[in-house]
Length: 115
Image (tube, rainbow, N blue to C red; front, top):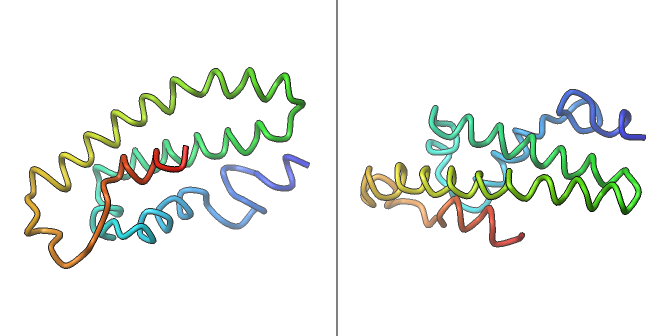
């Protein structure tokens, strides 16, 4: 079943998980320029991989799910640091005038508000 749903980081063999992460960030009003930037590319790729791993672990029995989730907590913690760094780059160092036309949240707030 896992192979039918997730193959090569694609859902149903068609949809890139990375594209879903980008669309999700844009739907939370992060400017598309920030999402498509070079700095955000590696962050989004990591979010996609961790999301894929989480979905993949749901195909296992409960004991194995629990062990896999425990191992992934550190990865998500490291991702929080990366999200904070991107927030500084996009929303503080470039100044609010750069993103004044969009009402957006911080990347780290979006990522971890649903955890």
